[in-house]
Image 1 (spheres, rainbow, N blue to C red):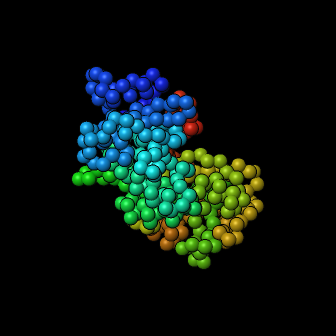
Image 2 (image 1 turned 120 degrees about the horizontal axis):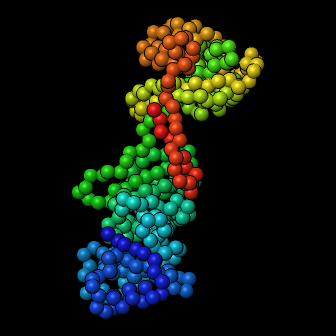
Image 3 (image 1 turned 90 degrees about the vertical axis):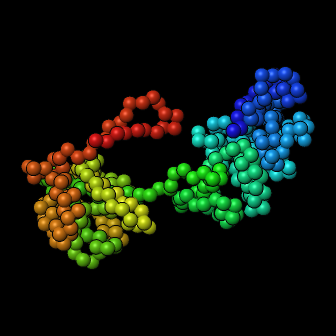
Length: 346
């Protein structure tokens, strides 16, 4: 595989001497890059390491100086630095080598027009194959979605999409099963089991959705963070306490799995009698005894999964939320430069 490491002027000079025939313990393992006077130089030790070398070309047919090419942008490096090398009149796409021998293309550095993208993608694929790159991750912003068909024509496949971009992948090795992970496969929903100071739970009737107009009371649900749902739909502020339980179902929307978490929240305001409803979402709202909800037919009383899930949220003493539930504990760790936090649940 191609090994690239930034070196100074002395290191670059040593690399050049090796290519010109100075005795050494062995050939250079890949490409060595260096910065000289603000410009980046890449020295390729063999035709296989060069992004533009034809497959199977013999080293003897190519003079040593023809294996030196100019690079624009940051120096090539393994494990994080941007790669953008010129050769044969076209520039390869910038990207970062990932820990698995693949490359993640820099979406912010994509060309602005389709012909340039096609030319750079063709040059990049040749370079990556020659350097034994394995998986390629290509993120295309929605404003450049015209590039998608060109990438698909060259072997890329859809991985996942978000409102602002589409992610495509390409597994380059032939005769080898594609081990790249699949795209997100699970939709997550939340239900807010909100309790006030009197021990009553908040129930709503939806203005839209499957239960609209059927006189069915339910707890507030959605796919956002539960506190945001409450504030948005009924104008109520509440404090998250814990996850009481969850339901996992396969092959639901778009053939994906669905996980629905029931969360215990406590209303933080003293007066919970006044609720401000978002009329486009909520038709009615009220505070009620949990038993009224559990005995409502057909939902949830006559639906075993829902009946069991909601019944498990009530303690043996009849108090809502007086169960162990699923607690989250923050993992002690050194400061993360990206501000990420980790938790474990039990």
